[in-house]
Length: 41
Figure 1 (tube, helix red, strand yellow):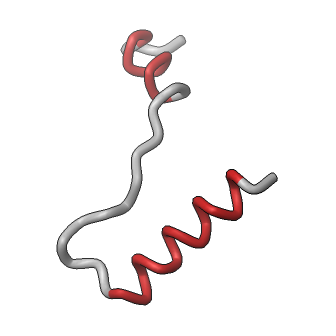
Figure 2 (cartoon, rainbow, N blue to C red; figure 1 turned 45 degrees about the vertical axis):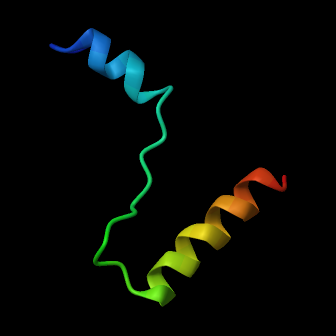
Figure 3 (tube, rainbow, N blue to C red; figure 1 turned 90 degrees about the horizontal axis):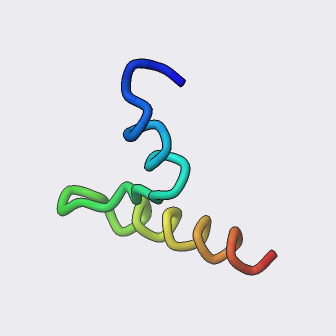
């Protein structure tokens, strides 16, 4: 563990999605496709 053990532990449990108001429709579709592909395994 490093200097921030709680943060490091949480980073293995929390999924941060790259979604914000400036994403283009094409970028948003890539995020959605990637999530769907991951969960279809």
